[in-house]
Length: 182
Picture 1: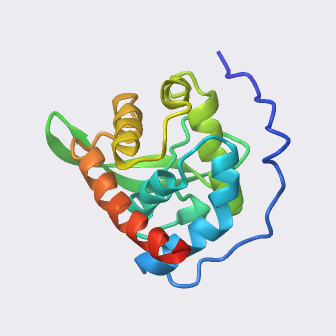
Picture 2: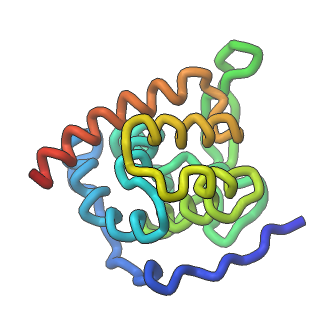
Picture 3: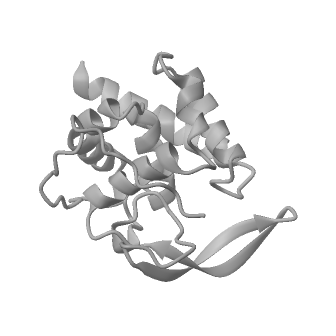
């Protein structure tokens, strides 16, 4: 059964200009780029920008690996409107790392990638309960960990250390953002 097409939040749908990451692999540049470009959009959609940026940082190696502008390592299990790219990925199966060829979504811009992530979390059966559980809670490290654990438990990653890795990125992202806004 196909997921229903969501009605976009009219306050958050303004399309940003096509964006380009200037220094892939640099945590400060990546965090600054993501925060300045997507903070308002993510906040409007009910996401903590720090945890979303941290998750993207882990998935892309701080922007080094963004095949097809995919900032979140979102796989494509069917032909979608964004197209797909087949890439080798590492999965953990029965406590062993396995390399496999998988199809990943290939959005045409970073904006489309963020939109795809928002859609994935808010509108797919597997994840949509997560935001409701955390709705209204402050953006703290504890709640960020609860969020990413819920995403992991829903099947986002097979890496048993995923939460720990994302939280390591979260601490770095938080520090960078705090120095930017203070």
